[in-house]
Length: 146
Image 1 (cartoon, rainbow, N blue to C red):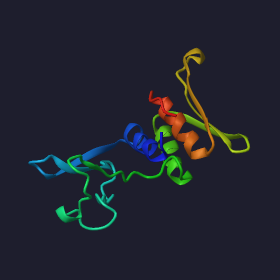
Image 2 (image 1 turned 90 degrees about the vertical axis):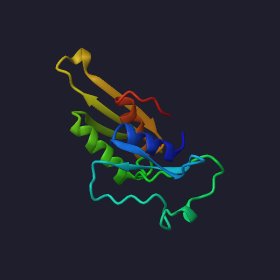
Image 3 (image 1 turned 60 degrees about the vertical axis):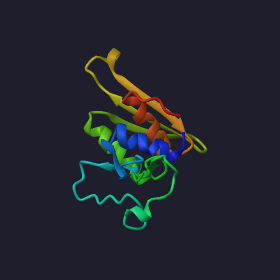
């Protein structure tokens, strides 16, 4: 899984982002898709980094829709990954991260249930702390990713 694929999964499954679709040519079904958060009212989402999104500005991709993904870089940017930690904490998960050895990071999310035998633990390791955070968070919400 690429970093941006993981970012999209985190945005959707943890942060509550949704995919939106705009049909440019209804007769052909050609259009584009992008992600946005419905929970940040002042978050300005542009379907393309440049231009207006008008018909002439839509990237050519044959008859297939063009996917545009503008979620934060959760899996590569520690500040963005920390947003994931904060979101998980609002869902009653506690968090720890540690460096195991050179270039190996371990992230853990734990949810206490009141019965130590039923406490939930999600733990994953990766070569960077942001990626370990994303993997552990996805695992905690029941999504397998590598």
